[in-house]
Length: 527
Image (cartoon, rainbow, N blue to C red; front, side, top):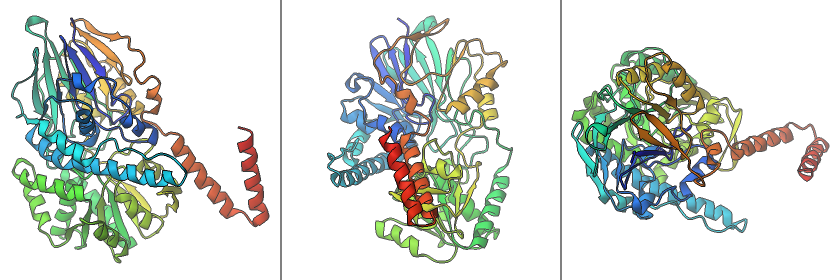
């Protein structure tokens, strides 16, 4: 019987990575991540898995980012009892990231429950708790790079450094035995060339199938060096200094925050920037930085990171009170806060305090998924809603795309070329439609023997020696694909409420405001 590959996440979207492999009565997962983005997409996290967790024999984890690991506590809570294989650094990071994610789930459920009580709705139950996350950690098993692991009977795996973040891996799999085995490579997230703190990605060549990310498949970044990136950051910070207000940097708490910190510290150390306070406003970033410090000798620029952590300019906020106190700081300062897409966490509070001030600067240093607050701001919205309140966007909105942990289109193309020969199909995952389409166009004419396939949510394929054969699957999250990788009705509603508020505010008098209200009521009555 041919092995099967099921795509249960990161399909025409950049989050929720989860791939199920069935082989001779055994089943295991590659990744089990949270869906992020719009409210509709995040609702997928609360739904039942499209498989029975107790029947899964093992999980192989590419890296610690929550969109790859964040549903592991739920998987265990729902009955999974097998091992979770990951690199030692990934396990160390998950030990701080997953409990933090559980805490966020609890806090979000509590917030929604309190709001719901005022309108008579039932309490919201968290997807999992911090305690659930702690329980799942005992099932992790450390695996070294480039050493074979028997995942289940008839399937073995090797981890290769993906260069994406501390501990990240591409996963090489051999399914079956003898001449009829199937060789498949999961890219995980591939790091760009010359990424700070991490080496260039590695992996062997000669596969039947490749499953490759396509986050930036349509993106061609300008070639730059580490020094070139620091020059660009220096110019942006100097412009923010001239404005005089806070420089807010929404950042993923793991890897990105540490990279930005190293570059800022280096520029200050070299007297390229004036000394100013740098606040890391994220308990998770603080704990993750401790993990990075323990692994400093494994990283490029690890020594610079250690020096930055002892600098008097660098301060970590831990308590809620310390975080709130940041809003009262005067004079130029920088706040690096999670989350990187502004869809949760302390950055929302900092934005609420500074986004409406023209002296402030918001500097994005990472990908902003469709439907997230970060994407809405970056796309030029004149105002946004944060915690139910309309906030004008008067701050300078800037972006540096050189901190991404993802390879761009040409780098992904080169990575795939180096995996040749690929005997059968290439599956494109972990990308929105534009990234997938861009990657498809790049792969034309490079000598691939099989098809380039962009699976949708819950699509399944039998992996044969002559190509992938789609398996008809019915009743599994039918219609859910429409929620992936795009704005939803909540985004549209927030925008409409802001437009209504603007129209009311701009009305000349009470009579004009009354006309607007009557027209709205009439429109509602005609629905």
